[in-house]
Length: 337
Image 1: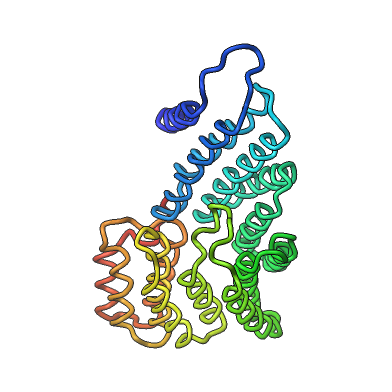
Image 2 (image 1 turned 90 degrees about the vertical axis):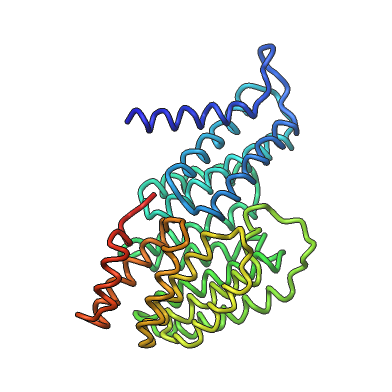
């Protein structure tokens, strides 16, 4: 408990160090304050891309969200600055939401979602609402019986003004919607066809997107490598494992070096896809590469490896592959944050 309190206090002090000393009762809050918080947000985005969701990332994001809101209370500012501060508070809260989703902390994630949507409304940012509804769809899909809510949240993301006006955001929203539809298709077969249509639409929209358009930092992860990865998830959920494997090889060939979290996640997905095609030895080699690179998997990647272990046991019971996996990776699949 003392360690946790120290971590929160240290994070709060780090966030506070971004803010200039205050003199007088109502100091002026301006774009310099905004820029300092924007830099902090970029740092959190980079940390998420490298390490994935964690309690540390979640805690840091919440501390910065609070400081963005405190600037509203302690100083005077123009409406433009106030709008940007609300946007940043929503952005930080959205990062906390994503960290909780990534580590499957559903109750905390729901609290962050409600706060972030309120702040996004105050900021007037349709782009931020798109991001939050996409996170909401993934959150709902993690809960038992949550697929209907997940679909509705994905539809809401697709219908935002930002999606209608920006082909890249539209592409991301369609790809995520396709993934949710593919996940739900066993209970509603027509959703499988809808998933394929929306995935085609995501690729078409991606080709239309202008590369030099000014966009928020949070969507920097979405490039052709990520679109291939999301396509792989759709295909494997529809049982088209050969197609999924082809997409995953393209993903891993295109991923930027700093996107370590995504590389681990898609490599673990590739191992599962290979296992489902009967390539037990190759799948074990692929899965082993995830945990032998010197970086412990977290969040969804850890859960994928747990699933891999269970499916490996079912596919090759009593084999040396199962015994070797349990000896070499006895802790894989335990929850980590």
